[in-house]
Length: 139
Image (tube, rainbow, N blue to C red):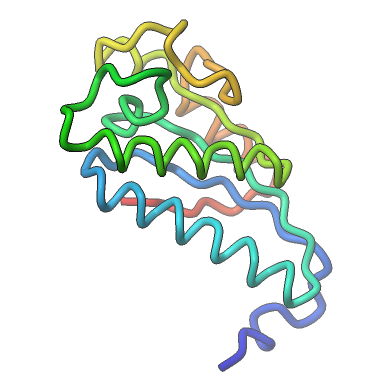
């Protein structure tokens, strides 16, 4: 299988991933799919620039410590945090919407240090699209 037709003539791709799902297993799968997509682009000789926008219920899974999620979801939270670390190593830009944090009752200080808290995640998503980032909705 190949994506050669879609990628023909491209040397680089810019994508913004709208990560907002709150189901922990589904959120973990979304992280895996972001990584798989990134890896496949690299393998195809395409240089991806990736921006990940965290908002909604996903907010609780990008926090420090064991708070905000139930004990039975701690292992998945840790895996999700591992993906955040990997994404930072890959050079991804990572942002957390302050509106979503407030809505989820998450302190800005509890957001993982790899993630920048922005005033409004919608503004970031729109601004990145205006700069020719393709939107990759994640639910």
